[in-house]
Length: 412
Image 1: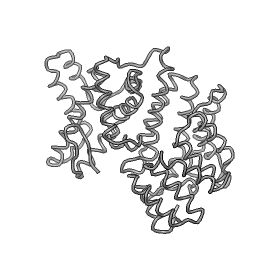
Image 2: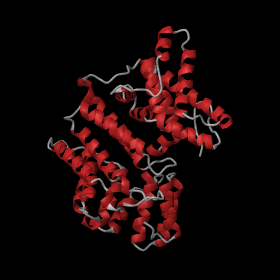
Image 3: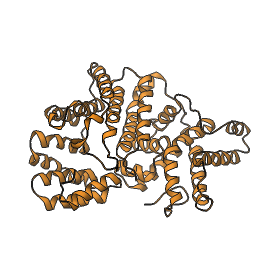
């Protein structure tokens, strides 16, 4: 795996590189937000963070990782900003006032995410820019999350930053009359953040920090727009996933599938609270994709055990979801419910129809393998699992797929 940054395309990974990647992953968003708040220059803030990361790549392997690597990156970025702005005394005075850790204002990241999601930018550009700048994902992680090449992501980020600078896009939360039109893009980004945290495309099985970030952003949006049912739906969806987080991995870091999870480890009070939030949103009779996904997760969360799962209800919810938001991914997930309502052959037929669209998506092959195994087509199932293994970088998923390949698909 390579670590890609501006000015240094591919760098061999060392221990300090890996630690740096983790630090960048956790703090790049806060660094960029702090610098953006002071400079008001989106591109400059991003460049300062990139320059600090490049300096760390050069110095940490020789000098060792500093005791407080996040503060080190901040100091380097701030000092380089001071150098760059030497002739701009007003900015210099503001930069010099910055201290780490930054104490963000309540809507700093909301301002940043709305800036990234400005309508002057294309929707793909909005998403990649927010994931990169606000959430700190690497280009490679974004590419895997969106199922697009890394070069495409890098080009979108570059063009988006140039557009923000050239168009003079303001760094602010929109006025109330603008919020509705800007909401869909912001919700999309928060949802992608949840997905990346729930099952990372990187080298960790999951990232609870990312899920925490997604919940925080969704909660801030809910405070801003408490009558918008899709905001409530997304917040409920995130909280339902968080409520089951303790049962998703065993002490060894192995992924535990829903069927085998110890439901006594779920946070049932949080599940009930999220379900109440979802029910209040549903009373507005404006169903949307996030409310429907939350309702599907709630069906699973409220079942006493696997055998108690209401697959008929889940299938109906997926049908509504496919109608409202048709996509190959939605149909793929609906096939899981179809397995239990119409049988594995019907589910496999739906999955096979998605081959062209999802050939490079690992879960497509993993789900197909599970259906093939159920139908007694063991060799084809093993081949599908091998293909899934090639396409995922998540260590927990890799371990599960290897067990299925090595042990005849009986590992769950």
